Structures are given as structure tokens and as C-alpha cells.
Amino acid sequence: MSKKDNGGLTVIFAYLNEKNRPYSAQDVFNNLQKQHGLGKTAVVKAMEQLALEGKIKEKTYGKQKIYFADQAQFAEVSEADLKAIDSRISDLSTLVQVISQGCRQLDTELKELNSSLTTEEMMSEIKELKAECSAYREHLEKIKSATNHVTPEQKEMASDMMGSILEGYPKTKKQFLEEVGVETDEDCKVTMPST
Image 1 (cartoon, helix red, strand yellow):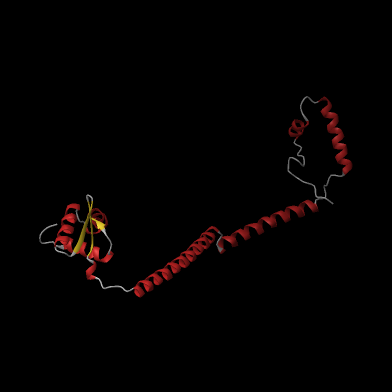
Image 2 (image 1 turned 180 degrees about the vertical axis):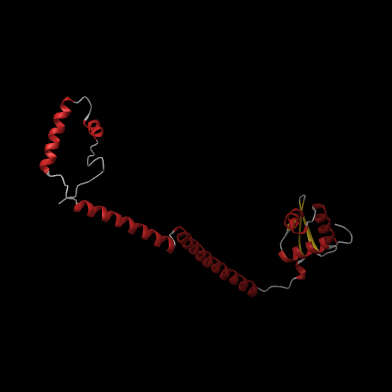
């Protein structure tokens, strides 16, 4: 801190009066260093000078020195004023809790909205599902309108023929069906509707 720059004294004096609580030189240095660029030695010297001038008070506890604003400069506060201040603090604390709860609720709602589909995305999804349903309906109508249905007699005859072939066939039934190109209901994952 240079002689012509007396800002360190002013800054520290204003800080101690504003906060109006005890601080060590290290605390003041930590709190003001980034904002004002004060060095630790400069802070210690400024606080000792302010104490010598009587602008702030100094108390020594063992090896530690504590500095605080001179309380004589502040007006006396009555018991009624203290109670009013305490009541105001209580009211503001309650208000902070209510607002914080509201913020948490809004944050939860925002997360839910951000994770849900937008109207445009929902409309697109509906359009895709309708197209898919339409394709399934067409496929179903083709199946219903087909005239080449297999009768139970034809199915039984095919099963008998396949049984006869498989008696002398060296491989399994599944391998035989694959070789001749026959697809079963199970292969196509077809389930028969109950009547």
C-alpha cells in the first residue's frame, strides 16, 4: 500500500463498519483480497494503524488479534427496537422458506415439462402411430380377404406327408422345414385368435 494510495485504510474501515463484527487480519485479507487486491502485510499494517488512531478497536486473545468497529459510533438500540428487528428477521426467514419451497416446486415442474414431449413432437408421434395402425389394418384386410386359406383337411394331409418323410430323414423336423422353405406359425410369431 503506497503513501499516496490511502484506499486500503478507507476500504478496511468501511468494511469493518459495514459488517460490524469481529475479524482477524487474516479474515479481512481473505475477504478483501480478490475484490481490492490488498496484500496481507498491507492489511495488517492498515488495521494496526486504524486501531492506533482509535477508529476501530483491537483485542488480543493469546497470539491472535481481533479487530472490530468502535461501537460508540453506533446509536443505542432499545429493547423494543431489538424485538422489532428480531420479529422482522423471523418474518423474512419465513418468507425465504415459502419462496424457496415455491422455487423447488417450480423447478420440479420445469424438469417434468422438459422431459415430456412438445406439442409438435406429440403430433408427429400420433401421425406415426396412425400410419402404423393403418398399415396393420391393410395387412389384416388382405389376410381376411385371401381366398387361399388352408383347410383343416389340407393341413392334416400335409402333416401326414411330412411325418412320412421325416421317418427316413436324417435331420430334425425344424431343419427339414427350413430346407424345403416352409414357415410355421411359430416362426412368424403368429398367435391364433380365440373364437
